[in-house]
Structure formats: structure tokens, C-alpha cells
Image: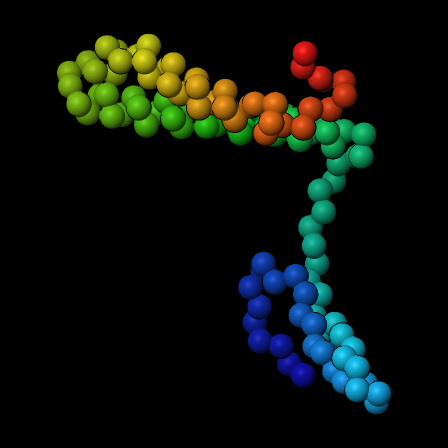
Length: 112
């Protein structure tokens, strides 16, 4: 059986066939290669934490940039007049991305 071209997100194709006794038996027709992260198990929690911090910084920067453009578009030197409010609002969005609830802190980096 020739498989059609599959999207990269397809991990596995399973065909169900009946046995002699009538029960269904799964037969794996296609199993795509999964890319595995190359990180030692001891460093996985640290890597996850650093990735979350980087995502929060990205959220802060993107939020600030959107507010900056909007202020600049609204009025003359608006980006400078709204600088404090824009940084504060963007900071709140970045901070929300770093809440304890959204992060699973490793034991060595526990926050009190």
C-alpha cells in the first residue's frame, strides 16, 4: 500500500485489521521520525525556566512595540509623552507571563 504525501505534523498512521477471532488488531503503517530535544535530564527544568523568561521578554517587547507605534501614530511625539504608560503596560504583560502559576520552578530556583 502506497501512502499519500503526509503533512509533517502526522506522527503515525495505524490501520485496524480484524483477526481470525474477529477482534481488531492495530497495524502501524507509517511512523514518522520525532525530533527529540537534546538536553540532559538534569538541565531540563533550567532550560524550561530560561525559555519561559525569554518568552516573557518577547511578550514585553512586542507589547511595548505595539503601544509605541500606536502612540506615535496618534499624535506628534506621542511615543515620548506615553513612554511611561507604555512601558508600565508592557511590563504588566511580561510579568503576567512569569507568574508562579505559569512556571514550574526547579527546586534550585524556588521563589519565596
